[in-house]
Structures are given as C-alpha cells and as structure tokens.
Amino acid sequence: MLRTAKNTERRHCFNPVDYIVSYLYRHNPLHSNREQIHFEDIWFVAQEWATNPRPPLPLSATLTEDEAAMIIQSFYRAYRVRCWPDVAQLREWQRGFRKEVEAIIKIQRFWRSRKTNS
Image (tube, rainbow, N blue to C red; front, side, top):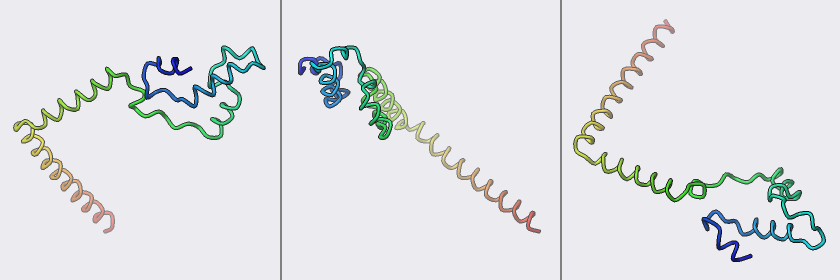
C-alpha cells in the first residue's frame, strides 16, 4: 500500500485518507465485487459529499510542474519589464491620466444631478 502511495505522480495531490478508505472498501474479504468501484461511487462517500461538499483543490494541486513554472516565469518577466525606466514612466503617466478622467466623470455626474434637481 505504501509503495503505491509513493508511486503517485505528485505527492501533494495524494490524499492518504481517501486512499486508505478506498483500499479498505475494495479489499474487504466479505465483499468480492468491489474491485472496480471508484472512490466517488462508494455509497457513504457520496452521502458525505452530498451534505458536506469538498472545497475546490488549490491551484498548486491542479497545475503540472511545467504549468507552474511557466506562470512563475511570466510573472517574473512582467516584474522585470515594469522596472524598466520607460515602462515606469508610461505607467506613471497612465495613473495621472486615469485620475484626470475620473475627476471629469465626477464633475459631469455632479452637474447632471444638479440639473435634475432644478
């Protein structure tokens, strides 16, 4: 049983309680017809999940190592690009422009509300 657990692809996706429940349910000597049943199809597991559904798996448990490496690399590259002086200057200009646009919109809303009240 432990060898099977060790041979799983990714250690952090392995849930030992699920494995033990599934193993004991399938290898019960009193019931010989349970070899091919999936964990979700065990009656008491389905009943428990109906009343207490499991939270979704975290992203770290669902990504492959390649996908995780690609995400980390892309975030690092984006950080390095944001540090360039030209890009930093552009981002600063965009911040100021957004503030100007927001101020114009607030003034327009104010004057529209004054006209409707008159």
